[in-house]
Amino acid sequence: MLLTDDLKKNIVSWLIASLLVVAFILPMYFLTKWSWSNIMLVPAALYLGYIGLRWVARSGMFDLFSYQFVNLFSSFRKGSPKKYADAYEYKMHMKENRESKPMVVLPWLIIGLICLILCVIFSFFPGMGR
Image 1: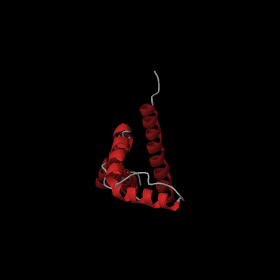
Image 2 (image 1 turned 60 degrees about the vertical axis):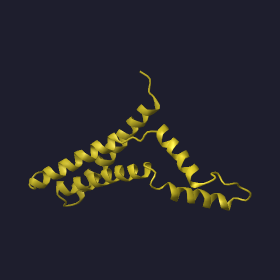
Image 3 (image 1 turned 180 degrees about the vertical axis):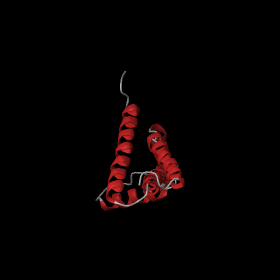
Image 4 (image 1 turned 30 degrees about the vertical axis):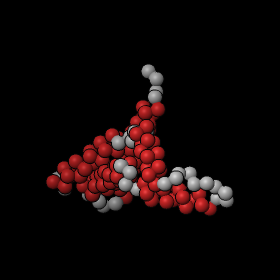
């Protein structure tokens, strides 16, 4: 079995998403007096918020701002021509890039939903774990 680039991205994303949750939960449990519900709410909100913002950004909502930054930085270089003729050309170029490189969503979404479900469960049973 060969490891393709997409499979490598998925494996790395799963590892990072899993390790970040563990790296957050353990110190919060042992160093604070937070309940399990509060501890699980933070990574759930961060992961699901991250997925939402990535989805909005990949839909092309911020292409105009990115185009302005590209033009701003190219204007500081002496004798540098504009990389893109107009904002529409930049938007089409970015759309092609987004279609050729899919976003890795599944690890962040699944772990975020698991944390959210655990947050709700622990909120109904506040005596669990503490």
